[in-house]
Image (cartoon, rainbow, N blue to C red; front, side, top):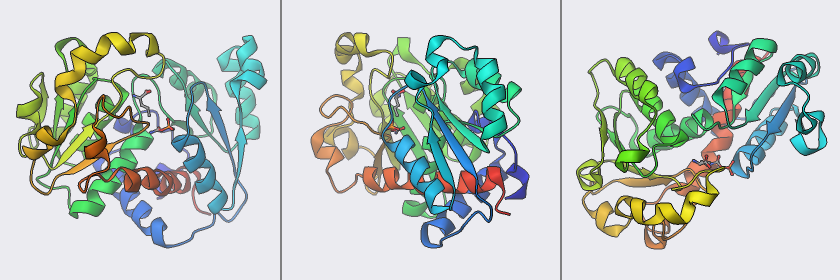
Length: 306
Ligand code: CP
Ligand code: NVA
């Protein structure tokens, strides 16, 4: 996809609706057809937080494209000793072809992008997780064909997943409902951005009522109640988030053909019950696999296939 060549993906709002659709179509094609980047390219992974899926799926995608991966573990590079980010960015820019970063502050991703000419990919920040939502929407597309008229309901913490799902659903013209406790709503600026993208054509609903949100939904989605970096709040959050648990009762009021998604890792019997996660409506393993196909499409598009 020529239009994305050389660009960054820091937020899903960096994509137009058309670009998102093309990216998902390319991901679906790459799932069944091998493609090689004709010249060797190198992807750097700079992850300040733990990761299983993102790290491995990016690595395998790059290897399958014929490229190489360098794991820039912050603990064994100079970044953990305080080398300024803007210096690291300018140096890595001279070595790598593309860089995926998992970090805390969205502003740090922006600084990297300002100082490095190579494409910078947000591999999760406290604000957004765009790569995950590309895989989520690919899974929805596989399960339902067209996303037109579908409603995705996210229940739990108004975190990076909630924010990126708001943008992703709005771009795909899906209705999106986010149900969170009052003190844990998604980012206000992103809610406004999603409403602007939806232009009143699709529903963007923020609510504290889990049952109203789940009613008739085609996709029920949840994530951990305490994200990476918030572990010390985990126990205190359990009673606050309990009404938002994705369980069989909540699933019974969704559309009869509803699917259940979770970005993983999951805390079973907290945000999702074991029965639902292992149940017939769960698509979490296909969703996890799709990380690799969606990111392969992203790598091909940002690097250019020539
Ligand atoms: N869903 C996700 O990003 O998983 P990892 O934290 O394992 O990469
Ligand atoms: N909200 C979670 C997502 C993990 C993939 C976190 O940031 O820890």
